[in-house]
Image 1 (cartoon, rainbow, N blue to C red):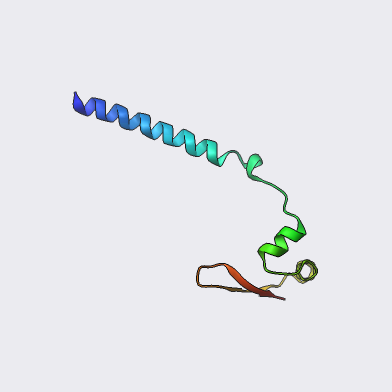
Image 2 (cartoon, rainbow, N blue to C red):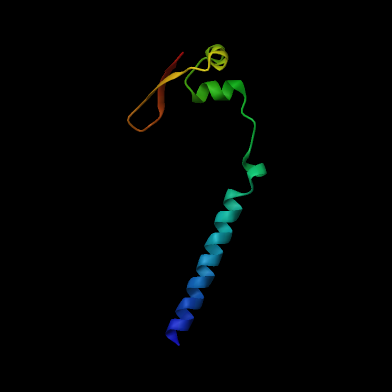
Amino acid sequence: MPYVVGVAVLVCLVGALRARLKARIGTADERWRPVGLDRLATGAALVPQKLAAWQKAQILYVEHGPRGRVTNAEE
């Protein structure tokens, strides 16, 4: 009997965790948001004019710091 109760509790916990994760992640349409050129340039450590030039050139050399964040980006 204790095993049956334990399994039932475990199934309930897994179901609740799955529901929380599903609500947090959402659907693909809810997660997609357009990103403007200014925000993208800030994230890539570039001036917006440089980013526009990179988009035309399709080449970007990026340097990453020890934690994987962008530290420098050049065309």
